[in-house]
Image 1 (cartoon, rainbow, N blue to C red):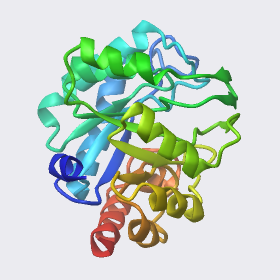
Image 2: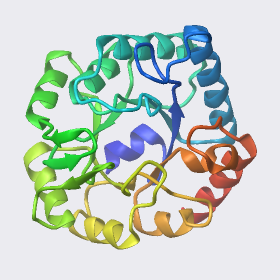
Image 3: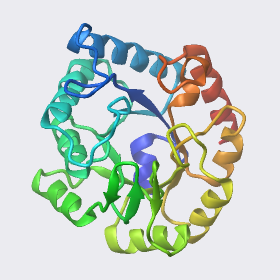
Image 4: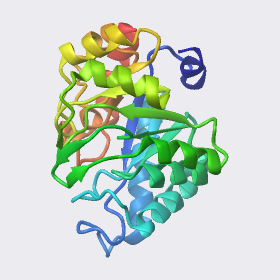
Length: 267
């Protein structure tokens, strides 16, 4: 908990998403706008989020639908290029997430100097992408090989777009993941991007992990952030900060400022 607070500068950080546009090679990529279009849009969102006072940002490839478990090398390389172009403009701690590829996520963090990363590192799921069996052991050993023992690992233990095949309860799965895989924080999600985690799930996971940061990973909204902050050790937010609250729109500075005002008052 102390390391977590030191990194983010608060015990209950708001980590805001910079959703990159669809990357080269993915079905929704805009060939006309190209790399310059990706950089321009990401820079605008980053600037708005930092102006709103978020505690950290995370770069993710949410637009690369349909998602993959073994991400194309071009996707990871392009994310590194975009983040590198924006690096001098980043004034808060930043993290990365390459959906849904733990090794690519760690590699991207190593290449860009990210201080944290998020992924599904544990469990077994039936998902929209097929049978999902991430390997935390490989990811943590890879982190060691690339010299990033300092990289904070945020474990999402309730995968979006998926159903856990593990018959244990969510709190038991979370507790087991902490024992066996040493995450720096545990994340609780809703069923899809932008959909809220159940408050009872947050409460149950936090109850069994009093000494580990537990964050709400999806669907935190302006009218729920106070309740979330009462239970959780922070949140990751994307859709609520966008124009009209739509995941695929640009960040709305006024919405982001309002959200941060409410989050700061709550904590």
